[in-house]
Image (cartoon, rainbow, N blue to C red):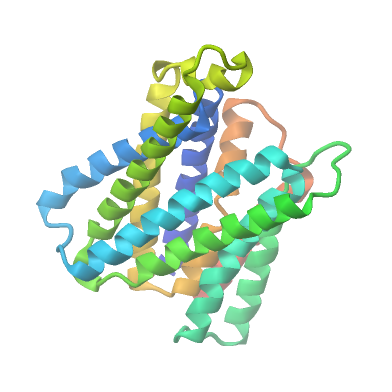
Length: 292
């Protein structure tokens, strides 16, 4: 029961972080938002680490650092595939792959369920697709490149969850500290390389415009995004420790729910009927997983 609750709360917090990250990305470049979010997520994790929430070890450093690499790749591919579109297909595809990867790993490495549990997992996957569906008028078929990027992003998100699961039980937030540190390093390196490439004033103004935007317009939103992302990662870690990897993987993949709910409340965006159906199915699936 507790695992299902933590999984749903974690998914909503991930979605809230994405919502704030999306707002920040309208003010500064997505890469800068990701870099800032990683840094401030790292700051909050470092603040709680001295309180005894984790023990350093080679395994915690290794698996946490590797999860930072997969996270950076996942975010980069996600932004790239959504930019190509159509989002109505690629967004739920990314989410469902991110659920299937850890679920498959968990089921092949020891997670056991009865008939009710397997039915609930299947229902949860349907909910993931419906919740992540973004209605688009006149949406065209996705390109092979877009599909491959979406699958790659989902696979890397799933790999991140699996790698976090490999960390020692007593490592606490140490793997998350390493995750944020590696992620921030990679993102700031990417920002710096892009800045080097676009700082030549003789280049076309269009590609150089994001580099001149500055950091301040989206700073507060990026900071909030980073703090929520760190909280969501912590909830994911707790859920994995006390429950099953496959359950947490599927429930975490419902992160679009938090985004669309906040968009409806804050931006007055309309939630499509198919997304409402997905939200209902998500709650039903979570209840069934709790019973299973």
